[in-house]
Image (tube, rainbow, N blue to C red; front, top):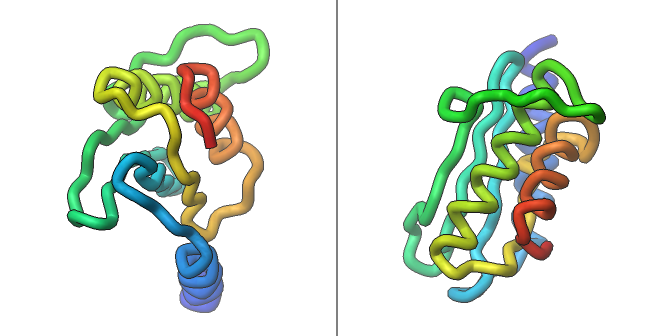
Amino acid sequence: MLAVKKQQRQRRRARIKSKIFTSQDKPRLCVFRSNQHIYSQLIDDNRGHTLASASDHQVKPTSHKKYQGKIAKAYEVGLDIGQKAIAQKIKKVVFDRGGFKYHGRVKALAEGARQAGLEF
């Protein structure tokens, strides 16, 4: 059963990535979510380089009225990756949810990145 779910996510991921178009001034904000952690990267697909990365290992969760637990950590990761992007003078990105549904932790990460100043 686990292999079937992984294959389904890989198919969704490939379908999503085929529709995403990036440029030099608009990198891809890629998200990976495991059961316990969440990771994000800013990737320049033209050069094949990672411009910035953030994970919940690096951020310290703060208290939010809106979020708690792992969702709060995901929001903090979004804020962190957004601040790193703004420091590199990147304002616009293409959001790649990596085959995951846009709710919960993935949505919180996106909202945190928007709050930091990124535009999708």
